[in-house]
Amino acid sequence: MLSLLFGLSMDYQVFLVSRMHEEWVHTRDNARAVRVGLAETSRVINSAALIMVCVFLAFVLSGDYGAAMAGVGLAAAVALDAFILRTALVPAVMHLLGKSNWWLPAGLEKRLPHLAVEPEENAPEPGPAPGGPSSVVHGLVRSADGEVVEGAAVTLLTPGGRQVDRVVSSRTGRTSSPYRHRAAICSRSRRTRTARARRR
Image 1: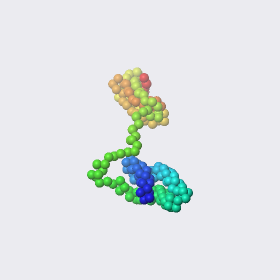
Image 2: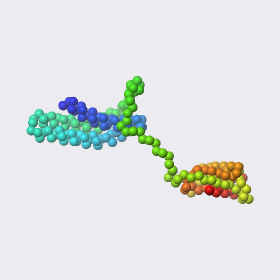
Image 3: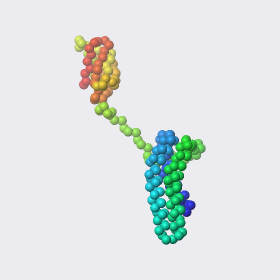
Image 4: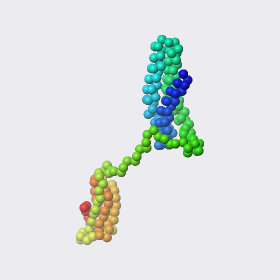
């Protein structure tokens, strides 16, 4: 009977602490690890415990006095372990212990393999921002007389007036800047009052 109870309790412990450890590895925040681990495994533990309690209580209907006593004892022990120990006392103690929960001697930590139940999530591939697909603005800055302006400051603005980028025209008066389709071009020049940016 004791060996059976030990096996059942270790089963619930693995569910609970393994999820806490996964969260600890990712965040290094003990309070969050305990909270997330308990929230995500409590339903599994409680459901499994309810099933086992019903199974053990069914022994009472067998008509055998010894089996009935064993069934009542196992059902009470499983209920106590799942509803009191695993979902209340163990998380409370682990929260109070803090980072000491995950302490290991340096030599032992190096020798033990680092395993994870789920594989690491791959970083998402870079893609276009919500503003629209990527593009490049090519501009040509000329003065009012039609001459190419070198060193003109060209500012890329959104429709709301937020600055996105700022470039300076080359010797040929050309500019190039990546932007999003919803942005607009605004040209400014220190050398001339009128400047023009043209998209190609």
